[in-house]
Image 1 (cartoon, helix red, strand yellow):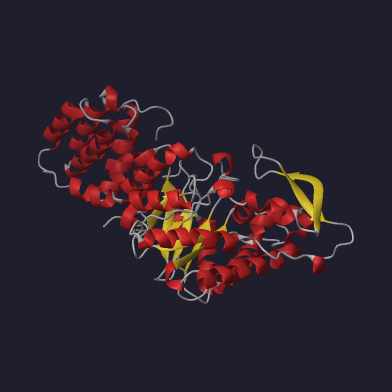
Image 2 (tube, one colour):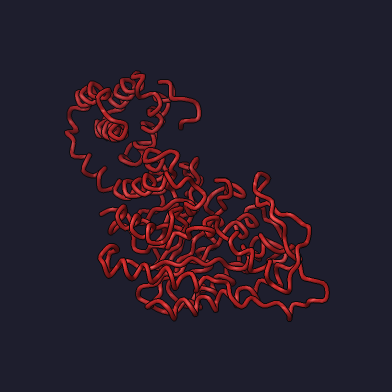
Length: 452
């Protein structure tokens, strides 16, 4: 069976109808829930919420500018007007429910016309206060405004749940870099003086919001390190902070969580990144989703990250690290196809293993002789098939001979580094010594710098 696919939220298309139709056509039964794509002005995550502060009679621009990272766009923060106290601050309408009503009407119409599968749910994404006030308000207001703003988020949840049948609705809560950058930096402040205090405080906030989601409605938590300019606010050391956070929320919440999503940076196919997953303690009903799909390195890069992840967890769905909203719309069709291809990898790799194990070198010669005639998509399949033959040879000498033959082919130099990753995925039974020899052989064969 293919893995499930999850979309974080934004999809840069013209409107919700185009998003629903494109996603349904590309992913079919692989996807359980579809967002409306957060199209138009919502494409850059929460920046569209500025009128909530600009038009609010309690706030005025402060003259202080904030950037999520050094190369990010500077945004002027707001502060309270002179003479305004916290008791005067209100957020009467965050607009999530108004937008959801229009998008759900489109979703329902397409489902009635069988353009969307009958059991697919309508996904709505909401952002808790800690991320919104981090961007829009001066630091000294964060802790005090947080519960006031989150009360408004709860009212949006109530309104959305009144609009959409509960069995057809999924609500996603974003837990983004306002949380995980602070945790990674161990940055004390109004949410806690230690990492443990911050973990507890942030987990309590999003648990409280999650408990507001009615029974029968799917609840999703999207964990994130940011994507402004396609850069993280800070690079995660490993998955440790996310695992600890997910465990706390899972222990504290009074209702089921259907899915928790955790990002995987493009350059992390190493055991050190995934090892904290050993400590993950999700409830049986909660699906883990790993954001290991990256457009820039395609199926080969994903294969390596899958291999590393499977050393620690077996059952998980796949996604990108964050929404698509900040990317070129022309790349979306290919990116959706890439999701489908990666979701199907386990199934297709299993089919490819139906190769005779007794003739590894003759198989490799046959593959090499046909390599020049293959299209680019088939060349990646070649690497996986060749790796499997190597792994099934049962002999360290045969492994080295076959790897040497492959690494000597100029057309494969840009792909040879993927063989080690594929070997880990397809042949976990290979002894550590053989893996090390294979890695040394490949690197000696001329893999380009930085390719591994």
